Length: 93
Image 1 (cartoon, helix red, strand yellow):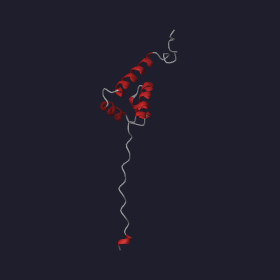
Image 2 (cartoon, rainbow, N blue to C red):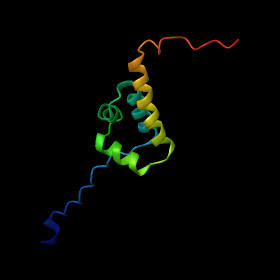
Image 3 (cartoon, rainbow, N blue to C red):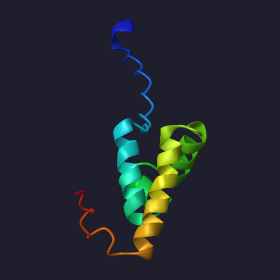
Image 4 (tube, helix red, strand yellow):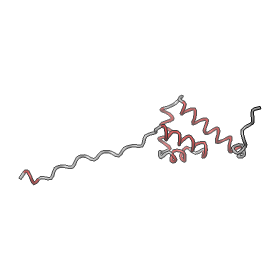
């Protein structure tokens, strides 16, 4: 009896892979300034350390690549002078 057959289930969709959206990139860079840790910054953005390195390699020479270097440099400056962040900007006058 053809009517009694159970239709085959449709193949399951593969889970969506997280993407490095512009918002995730901003979260990553902000966390990189704060932590100086690529792994922690990637986790803050919901991504992995290895995917962050792949993204950087793919975007070599772009503003994201340069911002990565700047974020690490800023973190290092903050470590060297922890009070620099709380100081008011110099007045112009």
